[in-house]
Length: 245
Image (cartoon, rainbow, N blue to C red; front, side, top):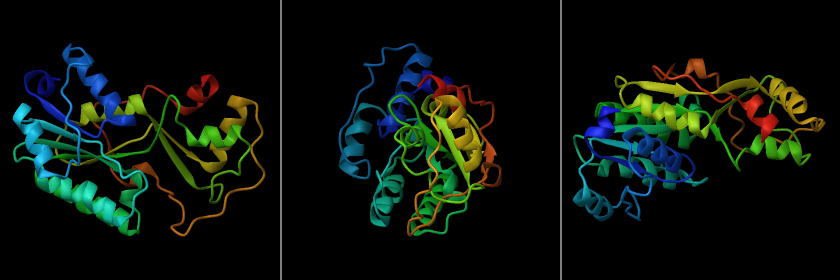
């Protein structure tokens, strides 16, 4: 963790993943997790970044931003505009999505454009599976509530990663060669996922499935969209977590 211990870094977005990453970094460098300074505002705003730069010039920038379901314009603002505004010389570790590797939507294309910007400046892209963790697992919530199964065929591939494993993957990626990597804790077919849920919870799966939306459903094999993050292995698996959640 010399990059963090020897020089400051920025975390853009301190939500579900970013807050966990900050805690991991604080632990790794031996400081109080309340100590890091925070700057509130739009990460694509040059004035906001200037305030952050006045505190510390970063050697690394972890981009953990999310549009929270925004449209294509929100994707451009959140990802492309922010990357263009970042200071030169800082290594970018960019959180992308597994679906960016095969998606045909405008949003997936914007993510790939953002990934290309990161690689052009020598950064690292980490395509993450769907995040879950304490208080957040849509798959388990829907199952326990008796809601229809997720859309798509039983052979559809579902990919998940615990938020703590995701944070650890980003830290490992920070020292990796510039490339596109993947971080996935568990990759299951839809049939396998619901069989696992029935075993873990004792609750039978719903007989019906939700209809597909206009954008279709993500169905990505992680092995086809990038190599795993070097020197990282997931420690938490979905089946074990669901049994105790």
